[in-house]
Every structure is written in structure tokens, then in C-alpha cells.
Image 1 (cartoon, protein in one colour):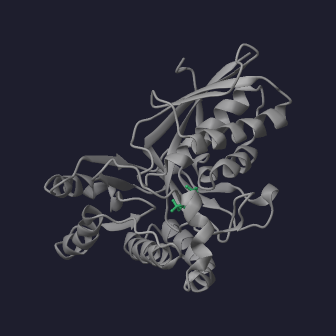
Image 2 (image 1 turned 90 degrees about the vertical axis):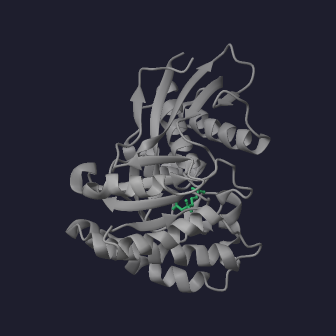
Image 3 (image 1 turned 30 degrees about the vertical axis):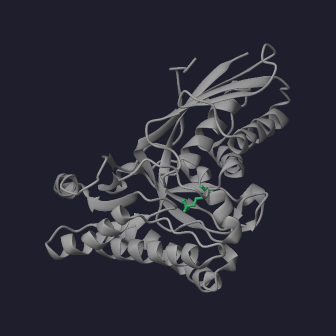
Length: 327
Ligand code: PMV
């Protein structure tokens, strides 16, 4: 049987997917807009073979938790169903960044698994079909299939809920500078968080505003209006965290490092460095600047106590095949 390897990027949501109208199919309550990241990558090799007695999954050189393994095997089953292949598979995957810390490792992970497994099974799916399949493994993974600036369409069925490119990577010279403070894994996965989002008394209020926010993001990206883009980015991040903080049970993802940096962005702006933040379900913070300001921001970040790593991402390429197999 054929062996296939895929490299998939993570992505950062400008408008967040939080809460679902269908938990099994992973249909989100709202559409979302993201940027594919150039430097946060997962590489995955998959091989189906009659020689394997069971599915084996290795991530970053080690085994994985039972729940995670089940989710991967379920995804392999989807590919087996589509292709008619019944063999078990060997999956080896590695990230070039810490998993489970708010850097969307499930997005890059399931995007890479989707392309590697379908190619290994001899399928040649379109971007749309890869996006639909990736979404069923992890919602945000459907956006990681595409390059540049991406929209996950607001639709009601599995076959229509997928992501499309809205602008190519070279459309806009901006960067997402990720500041890593701790590499500890978060204690509640976003998969669990989504299911409780609707318990927040503010959930409905948020959802009513999402269509207009998505429309505005597309307009600001089209106009390359960094100031308006950045203000909306922060507003949306805070509205999203207002839901996580008020759902039952509540989720507090920020650590002192996150909060200090959030507050600092305003100080830096007052000093003339135009920078805006967004934060996902984890402690690490994403800071947006125009290309000309990357160096200045990185030198400010290096001065901070407790900073472990800084990763500069530009609008990146989507999920692709690679000839460099991991086994
Ligand atoms: O795809 P999941 O289940 O890991 O959820 C992603 C949730 C956020 O990262 C917080 C938002 C998003 O749209 O990526």
C-alpha cells in the first residue's frame, strides 16, 4: 500500500468558532474568518497495510491519551469508509510547536491527518472535500486546508459546511507574532468547551453580532485597513472570552503572562507601535503587526519576564503533500 505524508499549518481565527449547532457533525453556530499560519506546522505520515493488526498512532515521538487516540481512529474510519479500504493504519505525527496550548494543534493535526490518510488510501479529494472531512475531525481544521485568508462558511449541512480562501497569502503584509509563556497543556479541551458555550447568558447576544463582524473583517482585509482590522480583532477576542468566562463550568484560559501582554499592547500602541492581540483557548497570545513592525515587536517581547519562545507567522500556505516520510 502507498504511504503518504502531509504538512499542515495551524490557523488563527479573527472571528472565533465557539459553540455548535450540531455536535456530531461539528457544524458551528457561526461562520468564522482566519489566517493560515506559515510557521506553526504539523507533519503526518499515514500508511494503511494488511501487516498492521491495529491502528497505531505516535505523536511527537510518544503515545497519546485514549480519548485523543479514539478521535484519530474515528477519523481513519471516515477515510476507510470513503475509500473502501479495510486495513489498519500506522500514523506518525510531529508538531514544530507545543500542542494543547492555544495554538490550534488540533487544526493542523486533523488537516494533516486528512490529507495524508486520504492520499495513502488512494483518494484524490478536492480542497472542498478535504475541508469537509477535516471539519469532522476538528472544526477549525477545515480552515487549515486553505492558504492565506480563509472563511469557514456559515451553513447548515455537512456537505455545505467548509472553508474557502477569501484572499491569497501575498494579499497583505501582516504577521501574527506568537508569544509563548508556558508549554503546559490546557486542562479542558476546546472540544469540551464548545458543548457548554450555550450555557453562557451572553451566547445569543454574541451570535447575533457574528454575521456583521465577518462582513467587516472581509471589508477591512480587502481595504488592508490595519487600524480597523486590529480594533475589531481585539473586540472579538474579548467577546469570545466573555463567553468562556461565563459558561458553566467556566473556563479561564489566561495566565499572568497572557494578561500582562494584553495590557501591554495598548501601552505599545500609545508609544507608536501599532499592535493588536487575539487569544484562543490557551494561554499563548497572538500579536498582529504590519510587516514593517515585526522586528520592533520581537525586541519588545524579548524584554518580557517569562517569555519562552516567539514564533513569527506570515499568511501561509495551506495543507500540502510532502515526500519526506516520517517512517
Ligand atoms: O476546532 P476546535 O474544536 O479546536 O475549536 C477551535 C476554537 C477556537 O480556536 C477557540 C476558535 C477557532 O475558530 O479556531
